[in-house]
Image (tube, rainbow, N blue to C red):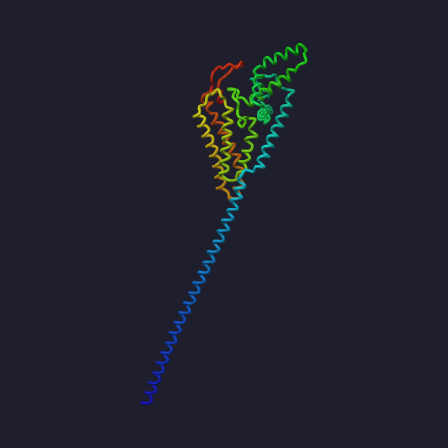
Amino acid sequence: ESASKSINLKKMASLRVLSKSGYRNLSTAVVGLRQGGGIRLEQQQQQQQLYLRLYKGSVRCKSTATNSGSKQVGGASEKEASVPLGRTFAAMTAGVLTVAAIASVVESFTASSVPEFDPQGERFDQSNFFGRFCKMFLACDPRLLTYSTAEAQRSLEMVRNYKAILSSSKDNNNNNDDVVSAQELSRSLWEAQRISSAALHPDTGAVCPHPFRMSGYVPFNGPICVAMVSSTSTPALLFWSWVNQSQNALVNYFNRNASSEMTNETLIKSYSVAVASALTVAFGLATLVQKRFDAAKAKTLMRYVAFPSAVVASSLNCYIVRSPEIETGVPLMNADGETLGISQVAAAR
């Protein structure tokens, strides 16, 4: 029994030793696992930090590329938004030559059918489109800008003495003298009236500046219209709309009925309202296009915003600048040019 007990004690002791060694081995394994897990966790964190650095670097590269691209696009857009000088000059030249050529053809084509000169009448029948077409083209003829003020004054004196000129022509024809025919003389008088009325105001006789004459509308307003149509950004469109409406307002002012007095306060107020309305229309249409369509399509459509905005704004401009005439009225005259009174109804019509 003692021997068996000693054997059992040895077994128990060996078991304890094994259990202790196993515990040590287990604890060592656990510590190793923990350390290994820590190493793997540290490696994962290092990898994550590396990925983060790479991601940030790629973001920086993308942002740099985007900025450089936006600068290039911005530079291109600025270049496109600038006024194309070559096309502007070509359009102005083509417009001037076209209107001058048509005016020359109209004047020559109708020379044989001119009526007898009457300063209160019209050379062309204004009851039909062809007559109105001929009148406007002759009034917008850029060649009228080439006449000096002295030539315009001589033409005005010729118009004022038309009765004496026509009567002397009839007397010479009765005497069978070799003189200019009455029809050719009437044509000369119509041309004299066209030259004088293009440069001198019919009410005051003041000289109208070249940019604000009807004959200067094509060479001076044409480049502005080309610049408006070429504008692909809102600031450029607003700037050229302001220039266009300022020029239109001055054209309306210098060609107004000067018999109706207009104070400086009324003039400034009318100009401010006209330009403000023009810019409002242009800005509203430009904003609508940019909000309704994507950037590429809006850039294309912006070229078509200038025309409708200019039409609406110019109509408002003409009415606002010349509306004081309706309030004050215009003088009514008889066939002899004598003033009979002031009429607001005639001004409205």
